[in-house]
Length: 235
Image (cartoon, rainbow, N blue to C red; front, side, top):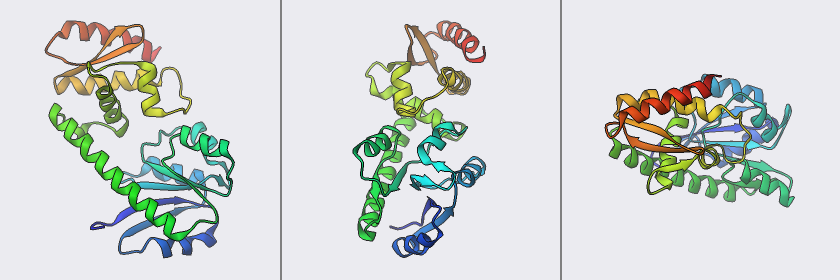
């Protein structure tokens, strides 16, 4: 790997830190450790430069990682994999349903962990590159958009006519993690205000469907749609 990759590791067993350091060499990886979910959450909310990948132990000193993530006030945009001593099938299923990109078992094999992390980092870079090309075609200033907003924009590429039901968007962005019913509406409302300056819009087309459109095609309908959803988002 040509550039140093930043990995955040959420692990309450300090004795495992030397093992992680032996797997991920300092010249290739920058490791930052967190002993609790709360410590991780506080840093995640404050940091501007987030890691390429997060590695999280499922059972932490302050609780179960997925429950803590679900109950927290953060939306985890960074890809993550989990490590656990449980080989129960339902735990595997639950992890992937919650959005984990991999599930590794303790005690873990060093070579397996390294090889999988390397593969995931390559996949993440390729996905970012494809996303960048797609957004370049729209001529968007992506520095103005959050990771979540970019993912919402990208989700419309699933449909050929760029028309998606709100449940489809929610599933793409938040997987199976429970969110407040108005969460998507708030994101759409904020996203529309930014998209307008770039000449695009997200139009409500009825029955819970949204459509990503060129704002210049029919701006009046977009304005009416924005007014309606703004009321729903803030009520």
